[in-house]
Image (cartoon, rainbow, N blue to C red):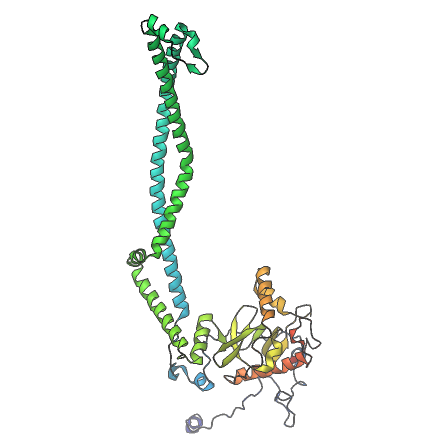
Length: 442
């Protein structure tokens, strides 16, 4: 038993595992086997047929790590409990964006509440005006019947006595002698008929005005509501209006966080303008803000969306078919892949890269990538046109050292694929499928 425990003790020899050893079940390479062009032993004779097919389906996609840093390899290999802290603070852009959205939503809700209250008050006021006008019109119609009857009686009495002074235009005054010989009766009949007709005309004029006011009331209501909404919006842009909104108990703590975010952004802009922001901090802030991650296997259906530059640091910004974007250290050898769609994956422990194909074997073009990522075809065509116009920008820059061995392997495989695709023929600006479209490196 003592020997058994000694075999598992601290002094036991550790198992010597060769780096890059084949996966379980994979045959060991022959001792004299020559390495291929990519520095790996030729295992083609022992690989299953499915792994030798250029169009073989790659290994199942695995979840990408949630890392948002591109620090050097030494920092990346340090365990989490002893990781070197970052020399600068990167804001939590996701939380800040959530607070900004919450603030904007609260501000919109407050404006809508103010507008709804004002609109209710305006509608109540106009409803009272409408009721008052309708009552006046109703009462006027009652008086109109009475005054019409009075005017009819007086006009008939004057017409019976002096028919020559009554016509379709109304009543006319009697002559001097007619009034004199009738001892003033002709004048009294005329005044009674004239006043009754005048009162009837005034009532009808007043009723027409009320009816016009009632008809224009709806338009006035719409205009009053519009003007009130505009005044509320302008009031929210003033300092007094904003202070009133910010003093609300549910807004005050949120506004405090918003003020801190704005202050941090303003300070960063000032430091950036003064040249006090390192290239690494610019990169890490952009990665956090744009939700970028370091490029990791597998990379399926990806295109080089653009070259992201942070001072002297340059990276290829890759985008896959799920619209996930990642950063890959820039290498000028990959420039010819900027108008290609490619896959990078690991098969049986070997990293491979190839140009993507459709299910029917035809070439999967960059335009197809944009159509797959954006269902709105107009938007896809617009973005693809912008991508085409930027193909010749940011080329031939200084290469960036890979952040670790995994990224170096990806870059090397893509560089070999780029050499096959370009072939020295300058085909990188053409959407026509190249003769080596089905080429695979690995």
